[in-house]
Image 1 (cartoon, rainbow, N blue to C red):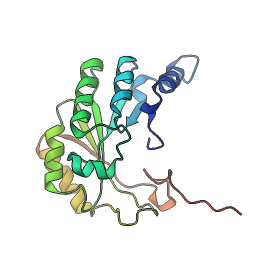
Image 2 (image 1 turned 60 degrees about the horizontal axis):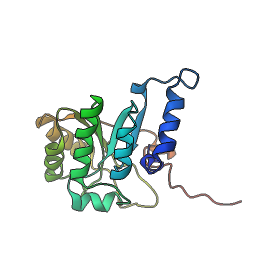
Image 3 (image 1 turned 180 degrees about the vertical axis):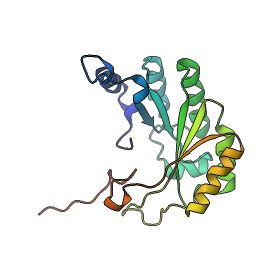
Image 4 (image 1 turned 120 degrees about the vertical axis):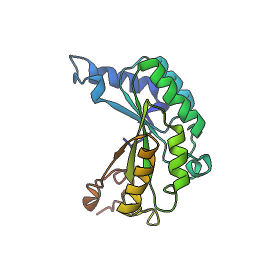
Amino acid sequence: MGMGEPLHNVEALVAALAILQHPDGIDLGSRRITVSTSGPTKGFQQFLESDTKVKLALSLHAAIDSVRSKLVPRGGSGTVRDIKKMATDWFAKTGRDVTFEYVLIDGINDRNEDADALADLCDSHVNVNVIPMNPVNFAPSLVAPSPESTDRFAARLESRGVVVHLRRQRGDDVAAACGQLALTETTDS
């Protein structure tokens, strides 16, 4: 997750998933594989039509388009409304719930209005992973809210009937937490 957009190359993605699931391959069950995407609309439609059986996580990060467009570079990624439709279409086709991935950033997408907009997007077939922002050296101003603010955000979602999984930060002390592996500086010796 977080290492490129899988729906920019659906053919290769579907082929790789077939190998991972085949008894002569890795033989992973479909419920043990999650495809995480920011939701390019063209790629999503092609993936949906492939009838691949896996779990789906949509990287939302904001339920208000003006905020999401700052956090998720478009690159073909859909609007909040598009993401909602993807979740609905996925559930209708597969019968499987969808996860909205939501990296929580202090002062950017952690307000009450953000939680309310997110709750408005969530039907009974959607759950939300709330992931406090892990520190990254290329964006020092992007930080996680306090644990109390994070808990308050999650509780507000839960009070609206949203199934919330609150991820606690792990691995950030060795730069191995979510979002920290993609952009690290290396020096030549």
